[in-house]
Amino acid sequence: MKLRHWQSECATSALHHYHTNNQHFFCLATPGAGKSIMAAEVAKRLLETKEIDFILCFSPSKTVSLSLQSTFNRYLDEQFDGMMGSVGRSMTYQNMAFLNKAFWQLLSNHRVLVVFDEVHHCAGHTLENANSWGAEILSKIKDHAAF
Image 1 (cartoon, rainbow, N blue to C red):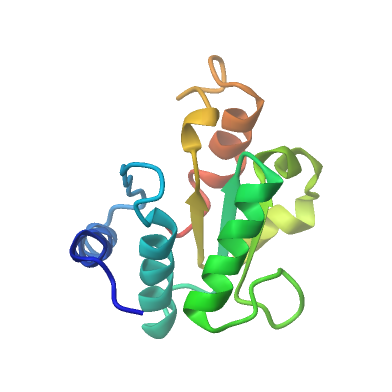
Image 2: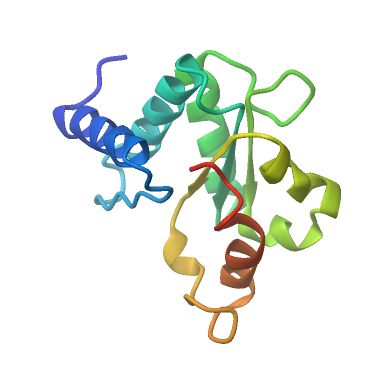
């Protein structure tokens, strides 16, 4: 699949950002612009260079979660359902509260790229002012994911 010019530039920018010791990258584009494909391209390049072991995608609804799963599965040409042998998993923000300690250990034991779709649903920059989804990100993902 040929990337749009902005997707290619954004993916390259994200990788440059990561390679200069930055853990977080924010992409903002209009709905339907192709952010998921751009994120899948970043994931593909990180997998190819063996900089990550696994990909997690979080989103606000089952519909978006399934769309991300389909996009990553198709774009990476890899299993993307969280099952044995899969390179990743897509789930809703609501699921975060039900994941056990063993699941979250994945972020400490492996190099994981975490993609947040519609992250504006996750409010707060401290645990004191965060909503429940934002608190999960701050306490379990922010300082533990590779990217």
